[in-house]
Image 1 (tube, helix red, strand yellow):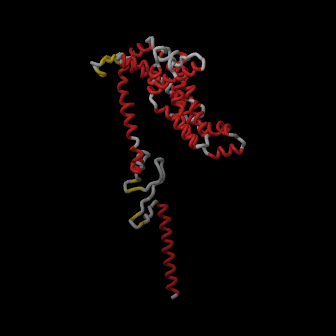
Image 2 (cartoon, rainbow, N blue to C red; image 1 turned 135 degrees about the vertical axis):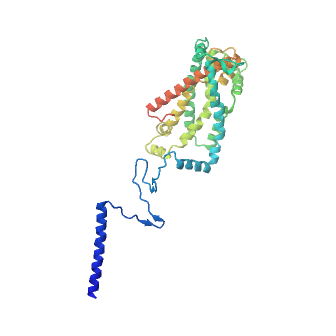
Length: 375
C-alpha cells in the first residue's frame, strides 16, 4: 500500500515537472501556447492599441478596420437624431428654402456686373465687358454723394440707435410690475410691425410744417412753425429719431433674453457687497451680456453700406434732396427706373463686398480684444 502511494506521488511529480519543462521549453523555443477556448470556440487574440484607435479583436484575416470620425457610426447617430427630433428639423425646411431661392439662387445674376446686359440677348449672350461697368460707376457724378450719404445715415443710426435697445432692456429688467412691463413691451414692439409707408404717413401728419400736429401746437403756443421734414438739416435729425423709435423696442428682445440667463447668485453677491441697482447693471448685467452686444455690433457694422430704401423713400420729399440719395436709392433709379441692370447689379455687388469686409474686420478686432466674435 505504501509502495503504491509512493509510486503515484512520483508519477504526479513527474507529470508536473514535465508540464513545467514543456512550458519552459515552449517559451525558450518559440512554440505558441494553445489558445484558450470559450463557449463558441477559440477566443481571438486582441491586437494592441495603435494610432488609429483603441485595441480591437483580430479576425481571421487580421485586425478589424477602425471606424473613423466620418464612418457609419456617425451617420447612424445623425439618422437617429433626425428621427428622434424630426419636428425640429422640419421647421428648418421653409427657412432653408427661403435662403436657397432668394439668397443663393440669385447669385448667378451677379455676372451682369461684368456684362453689357441687353434684355433681347439675355444674360449669357450679352457682351462681356469686364470691369468697365465698375469704372463707369466710380466715375459717375452721383456715386460719391450717394456713398457719403449712405455712410452718414448709417453711422448716425449706429451711434444713436444701437445703444437704445440696451438701455431700454436694462430699464425694463428693473421693472417689478409684471403688467406694466408686459404692456410697455407690447407698445414698444408695435412700431416694428408697421411698414415704412405707414410710418411715413404718420410722420407727415405729426411733423408736417403746414398742418402737422406738433407745428399746430407750437403755433398755438406762440412759436414759429419748424420744418421738421421740409429742410435738410431738420430732415436728417427727424430721420434718425424716427428710425430709433421704430427699431429700439424690437431690439430689446435679444438683450432681455440674454439678461434672463444671468446667474441670480451674481446679483445676490453684489447686494451683499453693498452694490445698488445701478451698480449691479454696470458690474454684473453688462459684463454678462457683453458677448451678445459684440455679436450684434458686428452685424450692425455689416449694414453700414446698406440702409433702408423704404425708409428713405417714405420720408423724402422734393424740398429735401441733399441726404436722400443713397446707394439703395441709386440701385432703384439705375435698375428699375433706368433699365440699366448691369450698373445696378455692379453697385449692389460693390455694396455687398464692402459690407463683408466690414464684418470680417470687426470680427477680427473683437477677437483681438478678447471677445468671442461672430465667425
